[in-house]
Image 1 (cartoon, rainbow, N blue to C red):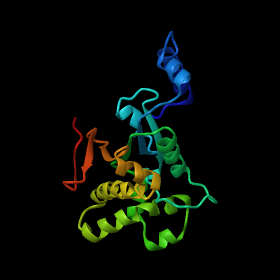
Image 2 (tube, rainbow, N blue to C red):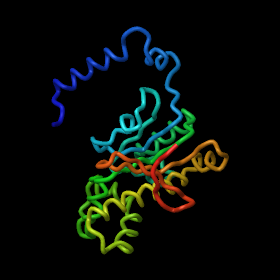
Image 3 (cartoon, one colour):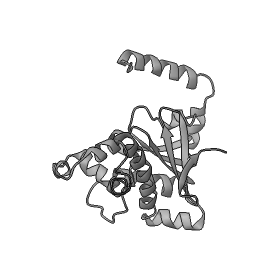
Length: 214
């Protein structure tokens, strides 16, 4: 069952008991500021918290969350709002992040909305329909090459193709491309299976997802 406000308040009190008694990790974070080396682009889905899945402590991850963990391509336009791009710029250029992980997952509602959409529904614009257009190249690959599959399998494949496409969009940012080329920055595509609790990682050489191992 979803937590009530009372449960959240209790959780806050337990958080304080864990992190704010005697010397804590927050003493260092306050004194020295944040110095994460990993940036995660994760979905807003309430079931997929990268800090929990990856067993991280405060200060370990710089996290960007949006619907379907999508990355827009670089746009040289300062006259509109670019929340995801601004967070990328801050993390990479100011915090000097060394690793970027695009963190997708099964049963993604944004990807499902895209796979269930028709041309007519896309004409009726909303914030979500416009945003998930970023994954249309992935949708096209699935519809053209995997039309025989059921919806759940198509959503799963589209989610994987979408994070691969987001990797390509990341490299349209000049300050990301420069750091990747110089070896200062590494890009990763990870996919979390909610039912199995497993993460697979995209292997560019093999052109497939394999279980994440040390």
